[in-house]
Length: 162
Image 1 (cartoon, helix red, strand yellow):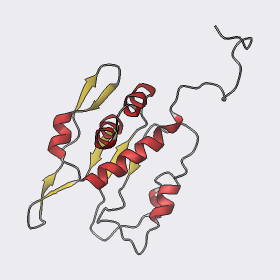
Image 2 (spheres, one colour):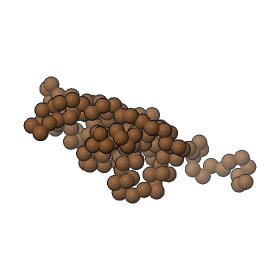
Image 3 (cartoon, helix red, strand yellow):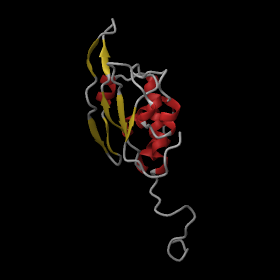
Image 4 (cartoon, helix red, strand yellow):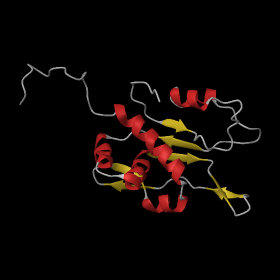
């Protein structure tokens, strides 16, 4: 994915597995390559996609996620970077929509800012493939969020450390 080098404050993401996407009229690769530009997606009549609003991690959140592995890391990435979920249906055994996943609830995490609560994660019970896709996108979105104010290698002050 080629996101721009500028800091992105948030991103509206539609997962490739979303049943509302008309795959015959969409270019999902271009959608991703252009920073989730939905002009490359077409939707089936009378269908609305599920939208995940994501934002980059802070430096401290990235450091915490670096210390984790596997599913634990995926869940922490999603908890730190997910800001909203729009139109995610809850379906019964027959496939009928019975409601929608509620908006995420948050908790303050010492040193990490607000993150999605574990209770909401348990209640939402998002599918593993979607969690993995969201986590990968949050990680990539966060690559430019390190607190560097000058180009790498630029000397500070007189070039002396300390």
